[in-house]
Length: 248
Image (cartoon, rainbow, N blue to C red):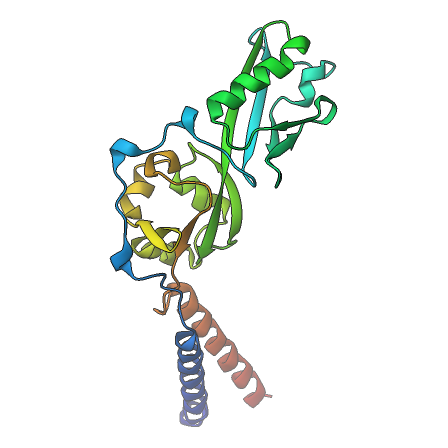
């Protein structure tokens, strides 16, 4: 038994050394901490935009719903080509509505787009009811499982945004990253108190998020439960391998 322990101790020391080295290499990676927090701008709840007055631009999109006499169209109706469909605004500020042609909707408010779609589809619907949901561009950066550019409706909650990106890196440990999460707009931190926003179901509309904003979760150098578990599993695999070799 003593002989086995003497053989295991060097392995344990090696595992400890490798784990420390791996974590040190992680720590050497410069985390993205964002701009100086002194540039933070507080959102005044009295001046948050109204959904009907929100102006869409190139890169944004609309989720269009077209109802005839209050009912969803059947598949054989012409307007079914536009019902429950997402249309992206191109670089010229236009949306291609197939056989209806291209309509310029950039720089129009949501209410104006709804009115325009009502007029455009009126010849094809007995009693049209048009619902337009604006979708804005938001870039998710940092410790999200799938960072990148997304389009969200204004009633999307912060929790739903995180879920759509696959969650936070580190799983449950990633929840602590909410303390450092912030909204970035033109190199200024607009909002950074996400703990209450997430758990109260606050929407991006209520937070004043605008198209082109970035939501950033800075990378933390602290070891997570997942990383420590990986190191432990790595060490145990080495020990099992070593024991199997000396017992041969």
